[in-house]
Amino acid sequence: MKKYDYLIIGAGSAGCNMAYRFKKNGKKVAIVDNEGIAKGASGAAGAFLSPLPGKENLYNTFVNNSLEFSLNFYEKLSPESIKKNGVLRVTNDNFSDDKLQTNNIKNRYISTDELQKISENFTKIDGYFYENAAILDPLKVCTKLIEGCDFYNKDIKELFHDGNCYNLEDIKADSIVLAQGAIKSLVSIPYIKISPIFGVKIDVKTTTKIPFNIHKSISISTNKNDETVAIGATKERHDTTEMECLTTCDKCSFNPNSQQEQVETLLSLADELIKLDNLEVVNIYKGARATIKSYFPVIGKVIDYEKSIKKYPSIQNGTKIPPQMLEYFPNLYIINALGSRGFVVAPLLAKLLCEEILESKKIPKELSSEKLFYKMARSKICISTVL
Image (cartoon, rainbow, N blue to C red):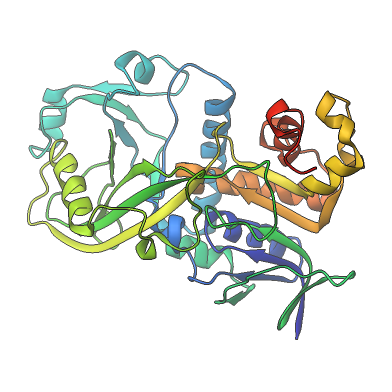
C-alpha cells in the first residue's frame, strides 16, 4: 500500500494544477480519476484563454488577473501546448459594442472590410481584437502538470479517515483535495451548491486558415499545432434541485439532444462567422462544467456544516464565530466551480490554495469556502436544515 502526502481526486484542470503545485513543493502526490486525465469538463473544454471585457468589477478583475498569470504559466510549462494568436470578440446579447470596446483591456476594432482582407472566408462580421488570448491542448497540458505524480484510474466511492490518515483501499494519504467538478461530492458540503452547465466541443479539420480565435455565442479556435480547429459552446444549465451529476456527460441521459444535432448546431453557428472549407469532424467531446451562483470558483478547507451548526447554533442568528473555531473534515480541501474558464483560473487558484495549506496564507474572501458556509448558515431558509 502506497502512502502519499496529498491525494487529489479529479484529474481535470483544477486537480492537475494542484498536483503540480504540491509536487513543486516537494510533496509526494497521487491523483485519481475514474475516467482518466482531462476527461469530462476539462476534455470538453475548448481550453480558450480569453479576457473578460466589460466595466471593471471584482469578478472580471479576478478573471483577467488569472488570465495574465495562466498565460505566463502555460508558456513556461509547455510552450508546445499553447498557441497565442489572440481572439476576435464579436458582439452578442451579452457583450455589446460598448462593453467590448470600453474597458481597460487593450483591444482594437476590426471592421468587416479589414477582416475580408485578412481572409475572404470571414462573413460580414466585425469585432474587437484582444491580443492577450490563446488556446491550449487540454490533454497535453494536464499530462505535463502531473509529471512525477502517481495516477490511478479508479472510482473512489467514499472517504475513510482512520484517525491518522485517509485509507482508500490500496492508497493512503495524509490529506485529500477534492477537485471533482460537477460530480457529486464525496462528503456533504451543502453550502457549495454546484450547478452543472453542459458543454460540447468538436475538433474539425479544414483547409481554411483561421488567423486567431473567434468568439461570439460559440468559440472557434485558430488552426492548432495538430492542424485541427476547435469549436465549442456552453449549451445549457442543469438544475441541481432536480438532478446531480453522477457520471460523465457522454453517459448521461439528462441531455435530450442527439450528438448529431449538437454537432450540426455548432457548425451552423460557426458558419455565421467564417466559412470552413473541406470540413471534417474528427472528435466530439462533452462535459458538465461546475459553477455556483456567484460565478466565483471556491477553494479552501472543507467545513463540516452539520457539526459546526450543532456546536455553534447561534451562527444562524448572526453570531460571529471565527473560522478557526469551526468544525472541519480532517485535512480535506476543495477546489471547484471553475466554470467555463477552468484553464484560465486553475493555475492561480492552485497557487492560492497551496499557499493556504503549506504557508497558512489567507485565501481572498470572494474565493473562500468559509464565505459560502457563513452565507448559508445565516440564511433563515436554512435554519432547520440540519437540526
